[in-house]
Image (cartoon, rainbow, N blue to C red; front, side):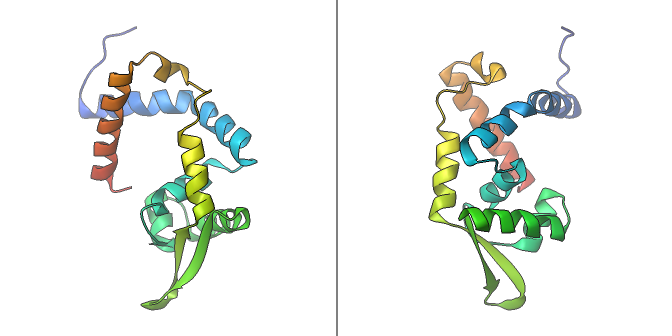
Length: 144
């Protein structure tokens, strides 16, 4: 293995490569535990778990177009994971809000104990806590 460069771009590329090289783990986990909910469904649930969000803002933060988010939200509604309401301050906007079932499925996915992705298996509990702290810090800075 080549020595790892720690420039910001190198760190980002290495992180992205690690995740993309093992993305099948997330796909399989979601498929097996949610009756086939797609990855983008998880992405929407994560964004609305702290409070309702306009559907257009979800699309912007995910980097997808509004019709794609509309389809994802429709699927999540059919599963009972989200509610879609009209924004009381702007009747043209739709707000997406997580339901109790949506919160339950996020908790279920995050607490799975019988799946340990190989890259994470090498970390101690303390290292996982530190990595989680760093990921949370990066997510906050990215505002996603």
